[in-house]
Amino acid sequence: MNERFKKLKAILKERDVDALLLVNLHTSSIDPSIHYFTNVPFLTHACLLIPLNEEPLLLTAKLDYARAKRESWVEDVRTTDNLKQDLPKLLREYRVKKLAVNDRFFTLEMMNLIDKDIRIYGFEETIYNLRMVKDEEEVEKIGKAAKITKQVINEIMDIVKPGMRENEIKSRLEYVLKLRGAEETAFPSIVLSGPRTSDPHGSSSKRKVLRGEPLLIDCGAKLQGYCSDITRTFFVNGEPSDEAKEIYEVVEEAQRTAIKAVKPGVSNFEVDGEARKVISEHGYELIHGTGHGIGLEVHEEPTISFEKYKGARKVVLEKGMVFTVEPAIYVDGRVGIRLEDDVIVTDTGCKVL
Ligand SMILES: [Mn+2]
Image 1: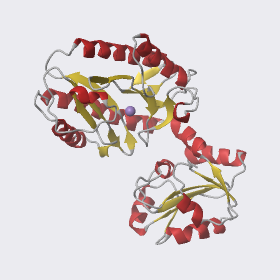
Image 2 (image 1 turned 180 degrees about the vertical axis):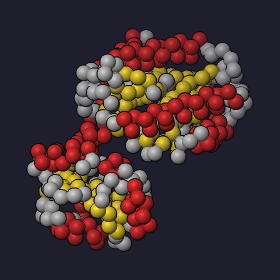
Image 3 (image 1 turned 135 degrees about the vertical axis):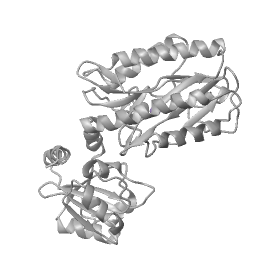
């Protein structure tokens, strides 16, 4: 049996639960954990049942059946024309009474489909804990995605000139990302210039970048389902302002210090603390987390931030965890500098991907 199923089943047993159920009912909400456990991406009308004492079962729409049969680690693949009707039947067939689900993707709509006497167990933490430590194949995919992204950002910076519009740079960036091997962008790219760089999640406009201004590019490639997430801030063909230059140096130091702190046994909160300290010592504030896990999703565990920030859990770093380190400083309406790299925890420290 597949390692991933083995680990999950051990936890089902320990927690005395009959099965894990993952469901995709709509294209707008696809649980990547189905990909994680089956090796089949983008099943839009499907469910995966992993019972404690039987073989896993994958139910898919007919249009995905051939692909699922070809690629899936699950032997038992069946088709459904009406998942809403077949799902409750399936749970009865397997006599499931205690059912684990992924809290993030299990909706009220799904809840209403299943029999009322089935008890639901939130397995979000378990699922993301499993996904948090990457195996060799996963690391290779993320590494390739990061490499492509860094190369493409450099390629784009070679052609950026004062007078070019943000949305033109963004279009070229995403075109070249795909040309160089990305299946998709990992998320909508952020390309901002001048004072607009102070919006951490701003969207590209028709504004033209001027000589010496900061240009912030935050983008990622998706490769076989796995994401990279890289940010660079450049000064376009000229000298930056003294303020921008000073901030850049602080952010660089914060990133360097945080990356140096990454090793097995250190917690996510400690890594965040290192970056946060450098920034506050210089009189600025880091207004978001230092980083986040990446994998099949662009934001997953571990969250590199401080305790209670968005409900973050403490995670002691282990070899194989992959996350971003992206400290930043934003001075509203003037300048924003963010530098982001992807790292993997190794035996003794970490490696920048
Ligand atoms: Mn990021």
